[in-house]
Image 1 (cartoon, rainbow, N blue to C red):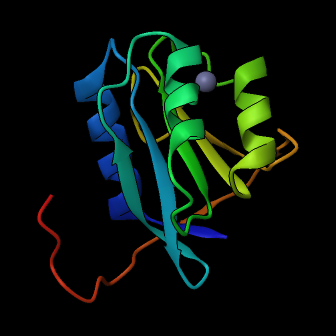
Image 2 (image 1 turned 135 degrees about the horizontal axis):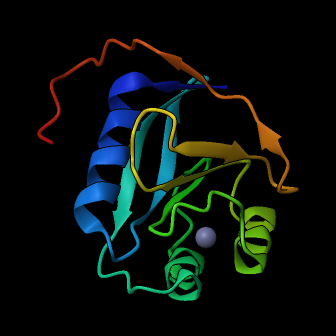
Image 3 (image 1 turned 90 degrees about the horizontal axis):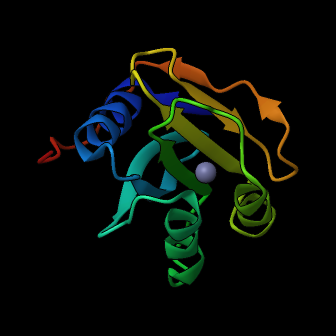
Length: 128
Ligand code: ZN
């Protein structure tokens, strides 16, 4: 699996601007490339509530989840592991300081996996 560089940059930017509140969203893919994030609005400042927001989302087509840990600790919490097991195959956690290495991807078992960052040509300009 891969992720578009622009999509990753977007995730890091939104997470940074949302801090100290948590950011949460669902990941969408084109083929084997994660290209889109559906943002969950109004997330509160605890990890539990961010994950609950993701649990309550309708079943939109998704390959996984993304959320931020403003503490900078990139390890999944027990709430996260339960979420990973139930909502898709790829789960990204980003954290302070929100630079290009401030993120990890996990599979549905909570094991860290590699996600290749690629340049991806979007079909249309997106209004971010
Ligand atoms: Zn978490």
